[in-house]
Image (cartoon, rainbow over all chains, first blue to last red; front, side, top):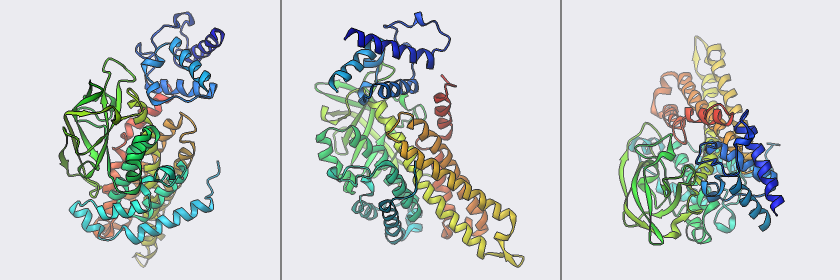
Length: 88
Length: 383
């Protein structure tokens, strides 16, 4: 279970670094770095991230899940994706 | 992608064109002049379920996919010369019915969708505010938690269908400290205490679709009015704008087809210096440009509608389509006026009304410059 969560975190981190933080030091993006509240992701980049997660894992996000409460850190993202995978 | 019409789509298109021509165009000049919302015609559209085209049949609609919905609205824009009525149907369907259908509870579906899809109810979308238009999420309307419900304070403006609406899809801030997940969508009935209609506005075009304010003063609503969960407002609104920016401009495509036919007919029959004016290159090239705009807008619309719901990138498709088709309609309406000359400036030829109606299209649902900003942001150019 922890392996799966690590795998999701790693893939999500790689996507964010490539798409939104090109050239940034990967070590600066921690599992707890605030993505939305910290201004790394805006509304459109969040939609891109959600699209990546939906396409990669075959899941679907509800409207209220596309929010700071569920997507503000890599840790939260991985938890939500894993929950969805577990319930699918 | 194959955009050849299926037999069902062809029948649907033909049926809507026939209905619109026969039922929706009477007295249009007077209606436009007097700014009258045609309640009876709204009901006739409801009998055809035009207000519920993509809603599943079990919930009161027709159950069309997004591409077929666009084809149907293109047919409405082609057959119906009342641009205000077409706009009223589209604003109701795309900005109100879609959020209720896609994100509403089973109770909301049962209570509202049959009426919304069948013309028994009129809905208004409450988003724009006096202090926030293009930056819609910078709204000041608040919904504060109160018991198990919410208490709304604020004013929405430029709300199409507002003065005649029975229910409102209203967006309000529930978590001001957040950057995303700060807004919640509500479905609120007109007679809810604390909810009233404010000022109505006179506008340049779309006269048969009334527009006005929605005022919320200490308006208490229960938890059953929330659409799609607390904090889902931004995503729900964004999805409704994808539908609107794609399927509303499908109506523009139909209007452009009608204007092109009007311009060609005039250019073939109107004589100047002993020959039809269409023989003059200045006129024929203008009409050729109208044809190019029409076909490009149609292809963009069909492609975007086909992708709607298949990819999160349909938000980008929607902005591209809306930007191009709304600007194309203004250009083609103005070209029609130019080709018709003095007649084009007269109300009875209806090209001047088409032009006035078209101008709204580069403003509502996000201005053309907002669409350019969205496209640029999708390309990673603006932060």
